[in-house]
Length: 277
Image (cartoon, rainbow, N blue to C red; front, top):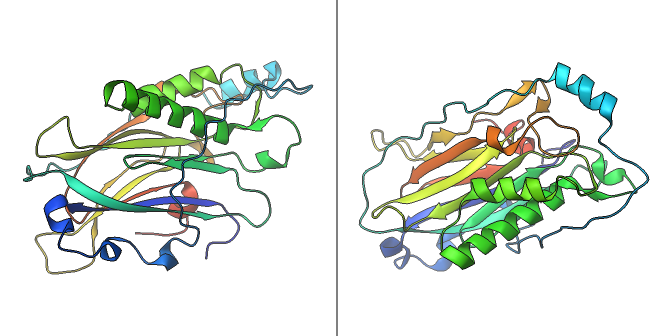
């Protein structure tokens, strides 16, 4: 078990619909040991506006931080390999796991539905404060609410627009800390023959897609896709909220065509910094 940090992980195992009927449901689920706190309920939206005698938006601090961490475009290339069209869409099983830092309450937030997922790494120590609401939970809830609204109104989900709208809605809401953000959706309808993971990521949370290499007989999967962390400098990732100069339009755009057998891992840096490929 990883100690001294928080870990928020979502894992999805993909299979063809035609193949899934040949397996018992339990064969599509990972071992319980992999998900010590497995649960699929989404975090309820948290859009609470509370007055406070304190403010994290301090003008002098903002000015100094802007000089130390100038805003820069961070659309780094995250290229997923092309895959051939399949006979039909994939189905998938998923699970969630939280490993809290024993030194303080959990500040990482997440949501998970049948096709929409998100993880948000809140700044360490924010939950210790006695005023306001933790920004990571607010951002998670607002992004989730936007994605639910998109799906119900049009049947399509745009994680980029959902995150951008959530950040804008929270701009004037009293909150504590800042947060990285990674939100994705699984699209089986827009491109026939393909199941596509679409999303956005800002900061050092991210997505890892593991895939069997068809050119070898090894059972060890290889990395088919991994987001590149966005960092100002060591231990200072891009974040939203608080006095951060970063914004949703700097987020890396994610588009990964999936194939049967893929394992998709959506996690905060607590996993990626401690579990290596």
